[in-house]
Amino acid sequence: MSTSSTPWSQRFDQGLHPVIAEFNASIGFDIALVEYDLTGSQAHAQMLAKVGIISEAEGQQLVDGLETIRQEYHQGSFIPGVDEEDVHFAVERRLTELLGPLGKKLHTGRSRNDQVGTDIRLYLRSHIHTLRTLLRDFQKALLTHAADHVETLIPGYTHLQRAQPLSLAHHLLAYVDMAQRDYERLGDVAKRVNISPLGAGALAGTPFPIDRQYTADQLGFERIYSNSLDAVSDRDFAIEFAGAASLIMVHLSRLAEEIIFWASEEFRFVTLTDSCSTGSSIMPQKKNPDVPELVRGKTGRVFGHLQGLLTMMKGLPLAYNKDLQEDKEALFDTVNTVQGCLQAMTVLLHQGLEFRPQRLAEAVASDFSNATDVADYLAAKGVPFRDAYNLVGTVVKTSLAAGKLLKDLTLDEWQAIHPAFAGDIYDAISPQQVVAARNSLGGTGFEQVKQALAKAQKIVES
Image 1 (cartoon, rainbow, N blue to C red):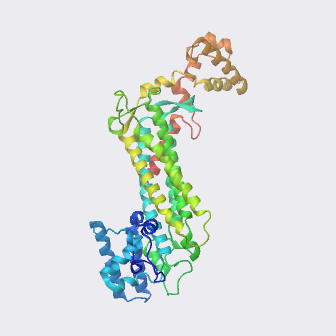
Image 2 (image 1 turned 180 degrees about the horizontal axis):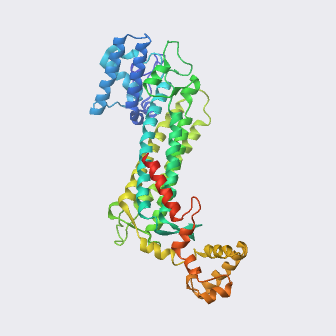
């Protein structure tokens, strides 16, 4: 690698050792920024012409040359290698090949430090928009099932023990709400992504009469960094994004875990379709929940990227350091992983699973998840709740010993337990009534669920 081809000055007498050149280069992954680098460079060229650093004709030539490179990239003829080191130098070298010495004027008034910071923000801003769109699609898939299953019951669990029956729609709407927080959280992160560092230079600004507000406006940034040191060294926005992405994966993984349980022979709450599951190479009877298992597994790599970014930043002095090259692969893989998982889970919900209402009805009718409702029944009759709670605990214990469910007790047996019991106890503890009765705001009562469903549908469609 000769010194004439390097993006730095002639201060060096020798070229890089090939191993170091390979180690130092980021072109293998930051080529993903090429579209954003070209767009940012076009805005910079227009600004240089606007303020008179170059002529209007030169500015237009630079813009046109950069557009030519964009077309070459789309056509597959612009394929920079390790000798270009990074995407920024690769673009500048190709521009100089196209325009001669004029291409070398493009870098006036900026550094690779503020240039890469601009590219990353443009990249992330675009992909945040994509991820928010995918979150909406995921919510819509959940809402489709929820609308079909308002009065379908599913056992509710705490500590993975049967607790109280729920509307299946209510259960699914919990994930809609999680995804809504994710949607809003990404929108909040986008505000801090959408700040322009362009023109901050290497760390101290530039003596050229640049117009930072102009380039910010051209690129759609809401504002500019007020401190040049912070502008080139800030990666808070990347860490925030990785945190928001990690929470998306938490929510996807929780649903994935439930689907894995629901599809098991022990639960049998859902049936997996052939289009979203695979079989075993030696056990012909099996149908494996690959999609949710992969989502559950991929969650760890996103968590790892968050930890990596935090660790990378924790000891960096101001301003730019080469360590910051490590932000890109973490961000790119986080974006790709979350995007893929959202798409796969959305397809799974639309086409990959079918709920089994009859099996769910059998499940909620075969346990003691209505025990709390017996206590509530007595409390409504004037028995102090704690006394009613203890009394029902004894009833459950004796019923288990006798091999009975609460619905199997005779009225005489109920009244022997407490005289407040009457014939209406059977309606009170039926699964449908148990769910319908929980009509407090945000509860699983059918009327509450219908209202929550309508509200969610309005938000998602807005």
